[in-house]
Picture (tube, helix red, strand yellow):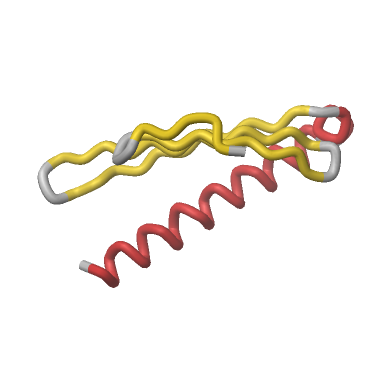
Length: 78
């Protein structure tokens, strides 16, 4: 579910999945011809509380992979 859109600046969405409530925030900041993308994500729910360390690492790995793929694609478009 999209919770907030500020075109060219910020996207916030959330979705429940497998007992986890996730909230995703992507922030875009343009400086000249470059755009810096920052992302934050939070997970909550009983599943998260039961396996916080493992899921925290999974979340970190997921965000790192998303940002790497975005960077690669942006650089290809040049």
